[in-house]
Image (cartoon, rainbow, N blue to C red):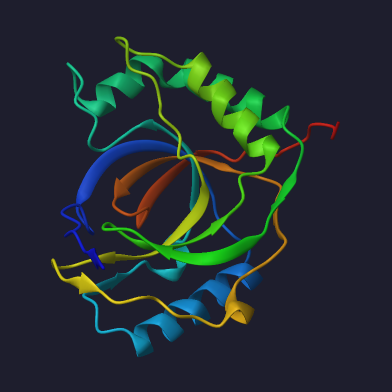
Length: 203
């Protein structure tokens, strides 16, 4: 059985920069229903991600927990203009794709829905990670496509999470992304820097 880990950043001010996908209203509604179903059946110390903060991170350009020689806002001041151009261009070269969420999974840090990582997403993540560097540090993208539903407020044993598969959103279209500054975790307060569209041609 998984033992949960306290999320020490929850609703705290931070400085981070991400490229993220926010689901449309229909998918968001399904995810909220799924959260409600899990909450009703669980005794775990759940911290529910607000509906408007539900997102999939494509890549984190500067993490709230990254240890660099200068503050994160200074890293962005020095590099952000160039990194934004790179990220926007690579997103626009990427074809739109779909996410098919097929499972609710849990780790010591979160409960989340996950999908197979489409090849378009994998290539985009790889291209951005290879193009961005600061003091030998490069972004390390997630290796799965996922949206976090809950974090945890205490250490406890987490019982198995059982949900109705019909509550999972399927065929979620990804046609645009948000490059943003995260000011309150988890993406509760954000400053949107750009909203590039995926315009590439499918091969």
